[in-house]
Length: 247
Image (cartoon, rainbow, N blue to C red; front, side, top):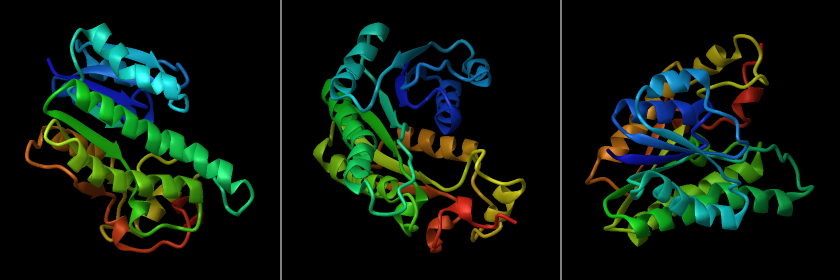
């Protein structure tokens, strides 16, 4: 059975990706930075597929370096699919603390995915790697500067890694829009923001997961980014979605 490592795979969008892979027949290694168990619905969705959770701090270079070998040892085989889904996300609306904020985001959102991709490709052959990006890489807003820069960097790394790791690995990206709103969103705001998209709606988590699964299986595709965002990347939004259509 194929084996997938999904960073950030126990919660939110990562959990939906993990569930879709399990339903397609993948065994799962789920990286968690907090040690929180997988969401209850995810365990039900996984069913009889094997699933193991790995507590790993992606801000720790040693822990990142050790993760692929730890997964391979526990499952007794190399990783077939790597989903770089975990992200640091923090607001930094101004110059104060810019150096530290940018460096912290780059460690988790760029350095860790690149290190994992390189290690997984080295240990296997025909490996599929999918980086979870963000539609804002096309038209960045003024908010969350450090986060945005780190996702733009990972998008460029996707193209570079696709060449550097070929033919042992394929490297692609999926760029979601607003999918799972946080508690920062007002009642009804998610749908109002969706109405601003070219398609008149936001993407669903299962649609992101379907794109990831397709790329995991698309053996002739590498170096590509698929936007699954209701067309958000085709428009320029001056502010982050949480600031739009609040009432």
